[in-house]
Length: 155
Image 1 (tube, helix red, strand yellow):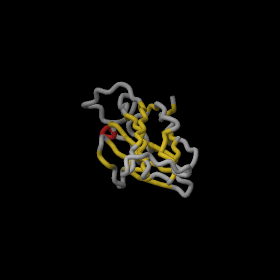
Image 2 (cartoon, helix red, strand yellow):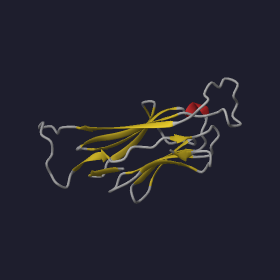
Image 3 (cartoon, one colour):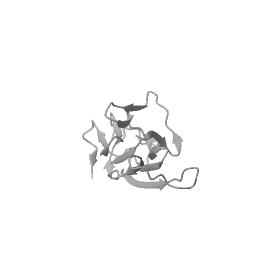
Image 4 (cartoon, helix red, strand yellow):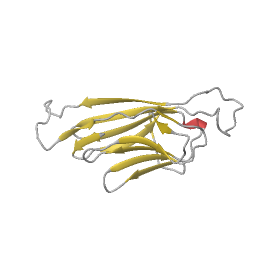
């Protein structure tokens, strides 16, 4: 869960590189402030560390999850496959930054972005049709992974 005021800007990264929207990665934000990173089809090269960063001028909050793809139980080409299990592990971090005068803002209506609930572990197999990483930044909001595939579940 994330909260912050002014509403934080949200960016998505994979292995430290900013994710740009394309045919494989879709980035959505709805009118309620719900942000999603959608992988249209999970493939072996999707393995890596995904980070969601929420930032406003008060500070920065981030959460990350490692995506591992299980190809042992799918129709995916396993010629060079060595992975036998898959999981997503999550870790959240929060940093407070000081303003130019070196004093933290005391305005009641301003709020540092905060991660109130970490991502949960999930399992996913290669070839899963859709993987969604979702975070909501307006008010009390949830972060979760979901899939249209029955082969992935929260743990």
